[in-house]
Image (cartoon, rainbow, N blue to C red; front, side):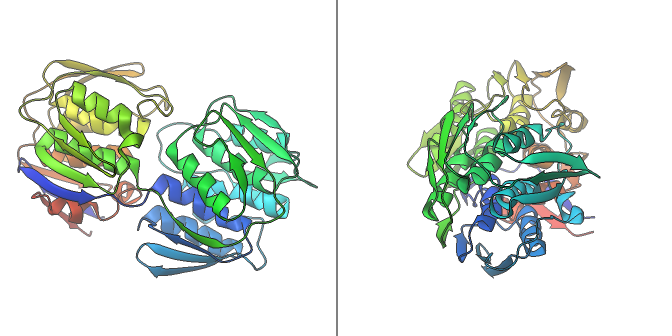
Length: 418
């Protein structure tokens, strides 16, 4: 079993470049199914999740070629199967993104109910309800979601919750539907904008992405093209928090600071030095950070995917901080691991109260999920002594060559393969 080993407490500074966004790449790759022409994607992150979704597409009949480390070419012009393989889908929740494109193209889809990080229930009923409103007959059979339609017809869909995944799946389903679809109470994350811009580049007619109301005018077919995946805002945020914790300065390049306004405002409030340019953030601090309060909310609120990382910074802040998690009910699994390193954290229902300590101590810890794993790396980098992180396959799902890039900041961090 692979592990990350860290000798913490080293001064960190320098420049780190952000990779393509995992959460944008996965639905975009699934969206390739909608086109019968060649599609080329660039700035694709070299991640296990990308490999998995590519294997799902291959199993469905799509030709996939990785032409370089961050470039893929897809050809979905052949016969496409309506059934996604259980063995792949069970390992990654994002595999469920293929359901909307399959239903749009084939008018039928059979996709196993998804797996992924154990951070909450995250039911797919919002996706399925939307498919029904587009005219599909939906059922659950032997652990699979099944959707069949004679045709998909545009309609008005109001989401019970602004689910990112449901918004993306329904955009893709509506792209080849007849007439106009309006998705109300849509999620507004930048990754949804990226998906819409990708589909529009292939000939779709989508307006309003990034706002609460998205209009999709159905088209008969999509063409081919080349598209570059947006930078990963969560990776950029993780490195910005590291700069604030470790003193820095750390220059985070190839990012969009406008995607991280909630985070950078919070870091400034805590006393960090934050400078933003068109495509970079410079984060640092002098002395100890100050305590703060944060509540996770749908975009443009504070992202749940940055909660664990900011909590790690709060562990060393002067005073008492609090984090309230409103998105997922089981996203405090990193608290027990941080406590092993000397953090003082108490949980009251969906709020964690963090009493700042002067130092963390290295310890054996586990990456209990993707973002918790990133938090363990941050904690290990600023802790005194040796930290050993296990279950790092979670980290590999969302951070490309994390150890190699952090090493270049002056850290003493290594990866060993078990």
